[in-house]
Image 1: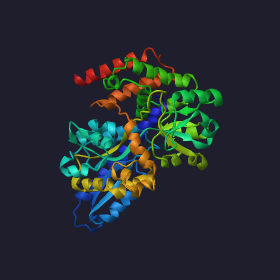
Image 2: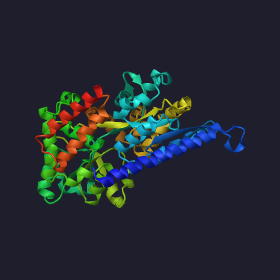
Image 3: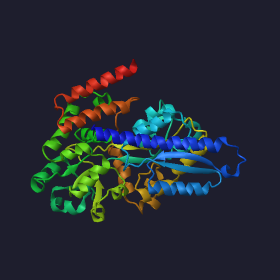
Image 4: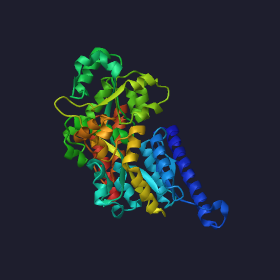
Length: 442
């Protein structure tokens, strides 16, 4: 990581920690001064909610605040994806919670952070009945536990997708096969053929290759689509032949010009911008179209020509999209747990989930929106997603996953940059993970 970039991230962490500290001081003033002072009279309990606050989130929060006016008020703390990577958000929230501050009541976590953040989270089993939990789609609910204890509730689901430009794909539609719903199947063999025939001097595919969690998501999808041995991945056995094959495959995507070397510096937003500005026909992403409109300098007509389909895979195998998503946790230091539970239940209600879907493009976490014609007649993509979940692959689970993931992403990123050789990377990763776990256990 360059000095400038390191300084930038440090500044971002410091900026948001400063905001949190200021909020704490304000809270102390409000709550410690005599309640009889009219200027500080509290009519409702304020709860602070840290997340990527989209316009859809804001609408749902506004409706909640109107419904519970005079009782509960939710104050959003925005950590936008446009400014912070998933890794940045992880560190910002962790630093705030380590102070045992009560100012953050609810915080959103990537599914793979659940085990790590459970130490700061309120157990939720007593707050949610079996009937309430049965409303959730199974792959989302399964991510909410740590040691069989319910510690989080899903707010929206994610699954890897291949985006493509309909206006560009017209040139080579004869190379592509389609499913019954006219969704194209794109194999790696097809991408190489498109490159050979139509894009000799230009990339055809963009993915996220920077040193962060998004790179690991891409790696797992490549691995699954190439028919990798999942048990080896779960065991973090990076000298397994199918994992070595995947690492080699990723490097060749760049060496053969399928993907540009610039992907080594891309997160989601940066990769989408590059693909759209340079008229690259395919790029890997997540479900929300609305995020595309956050990309500066891109013509709206290009975004309107986008569509989504199964992630790319090797002929003879199946697409294996990584599942993801974000869950809500309640800080165990929060003095307003009842109010926090009330807000979470509101955010996973049918109405709020439809707001997040229809206004923000987020995938719902409750079954009804995928099965009820009231919603599927308006949003037919919901039917596709419900079937698409069956192809999914999970990132490996481990209590120290976030630290293990850092070892994986940093070394694969260096490989893609040309700073490490393919032959040594599997052994370096294996050794790095081994040393990490040894240091933690001792």
